[in-house]
Amino acid sequence: QVQLVESGGGLVQAGDSLRLSCAASGRTFSRYAMAWFRQAAGKEREFVAGISWSGGNISTDSVKGRFTISRDNVKNMVFLQMNSLKPEDTAVYYCAASNLNVVFRQDFRYDQWGQGTQVTDSS
Image (cartoon, rainbow, N blue to C red; front, side):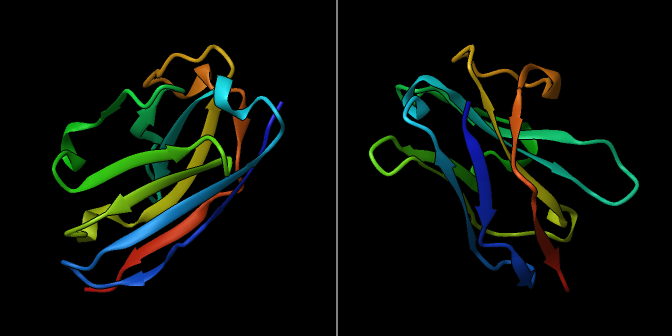
């Protein structure tokens, strides 16, 4: 198992950039597929982006060209670089891990979750 702790959220304005970080504990981190999900107030949690152990990644259409997921298997970190932020990006962002090492879009496929970090667009 891995334990996940997100950081980097905050208050932004439209067009700003922000980088979220997810620190993972555990010696088997590199075997996990990792993903970012988000949940806006009153809405269901949705997939944002995911990355396999080797770096292959996918993202949801609404963030393509703006958000980039990456990982550092040496430092046990996952990142979400968010550029050109929009008001609709406001949400709590969660880091998730799947020991199946396959990037899924469904949240039930992930068995480890962080506590979340809030991103708010104040525009």
